[in-house]
Length: 490
Image 1 (cartoon, one colour):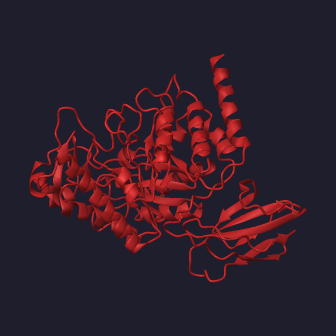
Image 2 (tube, helix red, strand yellow):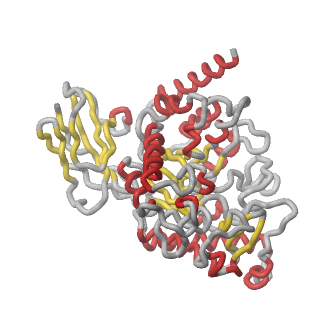
Image 3 (cartoon, one colour):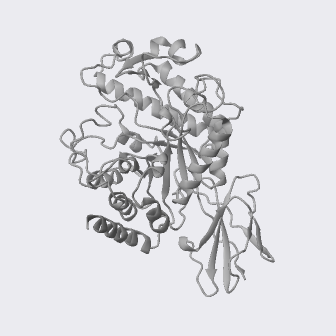
């Protein structure tokens, strides 16, 4: 009886989500974590072809549940899952720190190309200040930052970190990130929640020396927050100077501050908070326009005692300061739950419904991609047939660019549509192909009329040609959409 009730509730939620026209704009993503081989590669030292096959399978699976972006961890521990002259190859990739993959290839080039083939944005995920996962073991070559700048490294809670209080250390991390920005065709830089580390009871983060040198008598906690804010400000400026269209996204811990400490805070009882414990003043970053999207990690259920989703989800949307807020969702909670809110698809579908109904131009990311292979609840079918049945475009960011491409000019050659976009021969564009009935009005908000989102400038008509009207639009890399092309009647 309990099982039947759970399935019935899930069906009702699914029907409610899927019965309405889905939004044209919605960020749909998943994190792909490399640290400790959480998601990809499945283990260190796999042959290059097996790594590639695993990544393609994950992309295809994510695309099948509607994802239009992936957030891939390419720098887990001051190392690299890409060809870098600044940091060593990651042992999570090759099995040994500093050794390249065999046979040789550049995984980042490969991953970007495969994501773009599937019309998915590629957000390059960096952990900015973590240096070692085990402070007592250092497998790195002598060129690693833990050897070349031992004075920057602080052991804390069993791990080691680059001290954010040292200006040269912050500049080093920015230089590493900018190396990727300059050399690779990524769509965004993404940072997780690790700025200063989470507090460990009974331990102090040993930045006394850097505070004595750079603190200048200010309150130590304010000084730490200022260090991180300076890092974010300079990183954003550096990115925009190099590629003005590139996005910067942050995924902070889900509680900024508790209301008991700050009237601006959420009505929560978080044991640690982003502002007070990780020293990340993320609201100020939004107010200053230093980030393009915030993605708080809301891994709790609606009725959680300390940090309820029902409180935090609207709180973050109310504090977006004209930037985008997406939501990190705890898919992993479903992999081990035997009972309670995460034992079925209900809670996750409820969260997806709330985001869609309450937050225009919003979206979500699942943590994390490999969990789809482990969950027993019918979430995959729920997403495919309900929530993500129709495609969505990534929300545009008009503060970066609001100029849409020219409308395509389409011609029909038998069963093939072909088009050109005047004045955009050198720009990387994508195209949306729509099909309407002969007597239907062309309405570009109708996601159920989208046949294809693609890079090619041709479309082969394979569906029934009876009484059909086709139009095509062009998308630039920030998903600004052109006006509809001329209509083609078949």
